[in-house]
Image 1 (cartoon, rainbow, N blue to C red):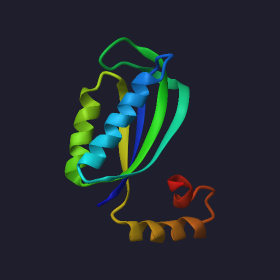
Image 2: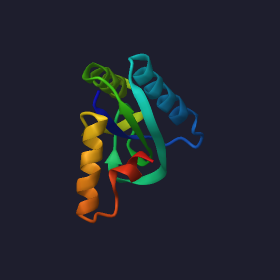
Image 3: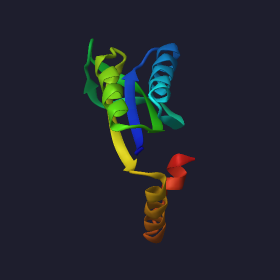
Image 4: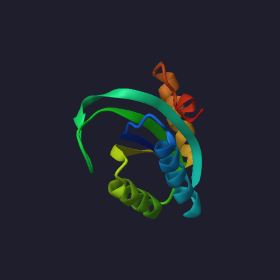
Length: 125
């Protein structure tokens, strides 16, 4: 199963209950479909680079979070459908990090050899 990273921007509400529910829904969807959730990170509340609108009024600030997971392409399509229909989601994107775990270690060696400050191991930690 490929390893993916999803970055999601949600509408900002002072209580984080809606974000917690969305993250829980996304993670349990991946796990119920046979995938593995590796990491969940909250980037906090940030000012959006531009005003965004989706399923409601224009937004100036949003809550950012990431989800690292292994899943089949079918699971990824259904997760994208969930994000598309959810009124709490402003934007999301999914990046394929590797086809399998062994490929990830090869990529890590390339990153380390080019002396970049962020390695794949830091992303997965």
